[in-house]
Amino acid sequence: MGINPPSLYAAFGDKDRLFLAAVERYQARAGESCPYSDEPTARGAVERLLAYMATQLTESGHPRGCLMMMAASTSGSASEALQKALTEKRANARERMRLRIKEDFYSTLMAGMSQQARDGATRKSLLATVERAMRLFPESPAAPKKRKRAEAAAAI
Image 1 (spheres, rainbow, N blue to C red):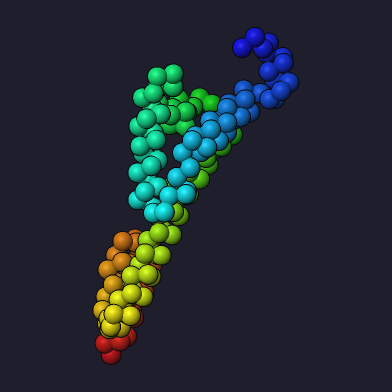
Image 2 (cartoon, rainbow, N blue to C red; image 1 turned 90 degrees about the vertical axis):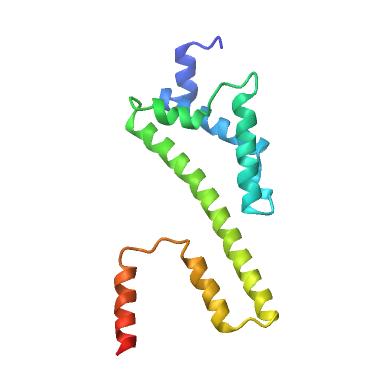
């Protein structure tokens, strides 16, 4: 690049900050070319993201692999602060996708239940839908105990 180390450090501070700046630029450019958040469904968003990755990861002129994933496997000797920053960035990406899927799940479920009610579904059948839907969610460790106590109390 023709930049001497003092100029580089003057601009970014240290190697960690330079690398984080590169990661942020990488994420911004990836986000611009794959704006999956505008997909109407979570399935469409996931499919668009995965297809984008398949294309990008094999495109000529693009390094093989993903900077974020490669950083995860090669940053073991990096500073604790850099490792923490990268971990947070990966966690944020997972959380955005999780929220997108959760949002679509609830919206679809509520719309379906509303339509079923309009078509004459009973409370019992709608509650059965809720029960089936909630099987997708892991329970907190304390939840089974509370449920058993409630069931035992109801049986009395």
